[in-house]
Length: 285
Image 1 (cartoon, one colour):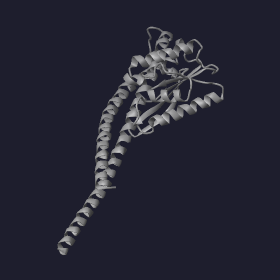
Image 2 (cartoon, helix red, strand yellow):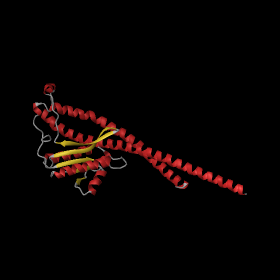
Image 3 (cartoon, helix red, strand yellow):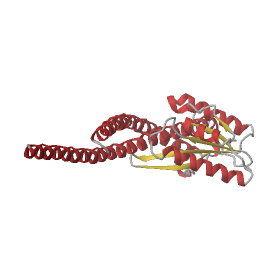
Image 4 (cartoon, helix red, strand yellow):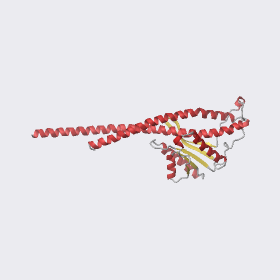
């Protein structure tokens, strides 16, 4: 490359570095906010599980809710969470690949799933392959509101209670830490009620009855699980983007160093050649 070409490429790489560095900073802020949202939700989820656990052991609550009844699985729904945008490493590619593998696995055993795609990337990927999807909630990742997550959960519960679905699976990237995320398949319906401890039964005086509380509590648990899956996926997306932009920035720094060294060598060589030409011309004169 000539000096001019190297200079142009240096300018291009420096501009790219500014972009990746800025995106890393923005994603870091979004990640912190996402982590806070998860931290705020965790105590609520834990308390719901705690109440559900101890209600489940009471004789008054032993009447089985339709939401916990396991039946022969004929119709399955899979709710898959991705992001709306790219530049987040393998985040979208991994969840799309995993979701497609799950779809194929269910298809092979004659249980073609109804796929709810959450996020534009997985929606586009499934559309491109011509797979049947429900994209009514595809834009849910834009606002990430509890109301929209609850609306999706209510739709799934209605279909389950009406017998149109026998099982619902949430497929999303679980956020463990900024450096660790993993894809999980979580069964949303039927609800798995944790076993309670019978000796703690006498600690509760309930109003309304345990049966009525279970009717109210189980839908709350389902709505909260959908909401938390959405928060987990969003936090994982931002963590993946921070890592990807950090790597891109470091690669840009390395390339800038190499190009600068190459530019300086060529410039020094050009100056040396010019001096030699001048010296040779002076001797000839």
